[in-house]
Amino acid sequence: MPRVFSGIQPTGSLHLGNYLGAIQNWVGLQDKPGLDRFYCVVDYHAITIDYEPAKLAQQTLSMARDLLACGLDPERSTIFVQSQVPEHTELAWIFQATSTAYGELQRMTQFKVKAEQQSFATAGIFTYPVLQAADILIYDADQVPVGQDQVQHLELTREIARRFNNRYGELFPEVEPLLTTSPRIASFRDPEQKMSKSSGEGHYLSMDGTEAEIRGMIQRAVTDVGPRPEGAKSPGVANLFTVLRELNAPAHNELESHYERGTLKYVDLKGAVAEAVWTTAARIQSRKAEFPPERVAEVLKAGAARARPMAQKKLADVRSRIGLASL
Image (spheres, one colour):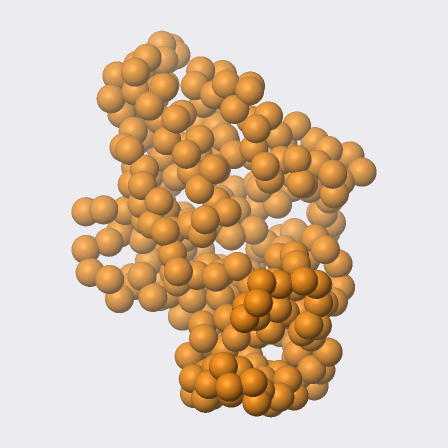
């Protein structure tokens, strides 16, 4: 059975970019027959950048709760925490030592961006894509749902697998990107950049926000900025329409018609977006009551109990192939 793997960092509350860019798609994949689905909260990745140790465990459980409230179903998907399966990091070290070229990591676009954002750029930011490859390959995942901005990392995963297979014998699958239609959601404050917590307050919309907070942020969204080709939407307007479309808002087609006729009022567009986002956020917030902390912990333990034996079996094969002693 084809297997899908994807992960998300526990960076605190879920934001709109996370939901539309990844999680909504993960939930939808549960309705696709013939797929074995693995979804992981990647807390090892989270410690490669500035973070607060006292908050990490709570943020990890909070993100898992958000995933469940969004619709991930532990009966149809394996949901677990990365650090509960430490075999990920051992495989990452083996890949670094045997199958990853230094120059390949130097070319990673996200490394350059993240390193510039940190006062202390750790080696973990540099080797992050190797751990990502281990996350995927330790479960023989052959499909990874990604947007276009993640294709570079996935190509490195494919190259690591090929290099390992050529040197030690066929063991890992040829991973294919499951290219999603999930959009790149931009910041409402600066629609030229991706919605991200790393850009600071005002650049992301928390799905935990109150109705007033959510509606207020969207009403303040930047619309007309910068030059654009004749007839094309400005980045801010295009971003608002993307959110409407991805949330299947009833007003989307009508507002598109107004735009084409030149009769669109931005106040109406922002109002429709605010209504659609708040409806979605309110649904997610209300569902959280179904997942108290003890229930979330149960789901994660069960997920790790399924994932870890698979990881251990794969790692034992890897250790044997590379010549480590079995004592």
